[in-house]
Length: 484
Image 1: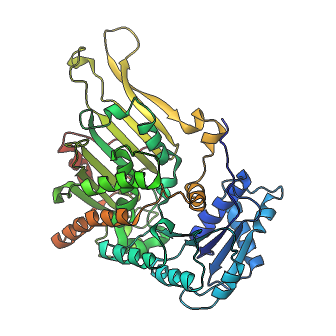
Image 2: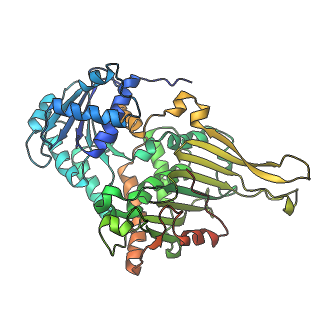
Image 3: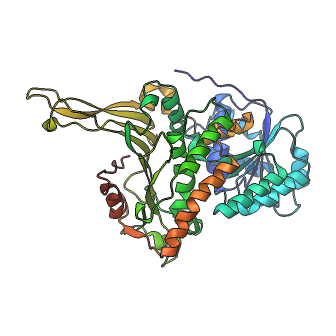
């Protein structure tokens, strides 16, 4: 199976923070892979802007090293890399002053789409946006890309949206969440709305509950200062898991168009119930013999910030009335795994009797690693001895089912950057969507702060705090295992 690659017209992309970690690990390698595939064409210009004292040749050397390290083996030593590097330019620039802005303006061409990627801290969004406007760099083909966090709470999110709105129209603003660029996340919509098999069952009448798990084996690493201000609720739950919940729970949009899709996602967020205190579990990972615990990692011995959170919520609408959604995410867990489990109700009557066994039907959508979809169904156990029922998986691993295309799917940033250039906002969050997510999140955070709650300790490389199991067992349910 060979996917069709449609080249985009030459464009100018300015990457603010072009020497930073995100640019080196993700943005530049993603552009290179799209160049290797034929989607990014000659005549395109990528301009890195940063405070680092470099020239264009020095930056090309930095980019070449990054591509060789992070482009998943595609260094293209046949000369492709050298041709791609000729597309790169570098401008030493002060985001809060005037140094370098005239040089940047001179490099940008007038006859093409231009995108400004703000791979910088949120404190620099406002000064950069203002200078892009004041230096006459905004036209009809301008897009601006901002990375999360989109604020720290509802008030700051509103302020950020207002700042961006001063200089750009909403149709020009791309709030990027890399989770939405994952191939399997996009397949959520294809599975739901492209198959008559699932959509008639996708409601409270047939679905018992839904579990969404995003587990990481790593700790906070070098992000300790940021993470201790944010925690798992702000860093993961409010955006990544919220987006997955929206795609699972939303109504079918009238058309597969940006605002039609985002309208339905917004309805889900606004329909979320407030989360009761006894439906929340927070945790912090302990130290091991060879790695620090959370508090040691962030350098804060009395930190009350969570590295793990699990919660139960409901979507109060006709489709999902009474169906609980269980969400959990954490660091230093037993495996790296992102999976959505749609657990269907038992058959209303078993003709085989209580001793026959059997289990609920479960649709498992694996986002990472080993992207794919598994449907757990009940069959007869082979052999003699009467009717004994067992649970077996019907497994579709993308790597196996789709051949080379499934083994090497585009990185999320590849898809999302190309969508920016094409002007397709379907996989990007709208301003009102961000604010609605914070409006749901803020009361949860204020609640545990007011109660003075301290996160529960949990063993590193485990499945998380024991209390999270109790959250499910009170409802006579169990978490699905966290598997690599």
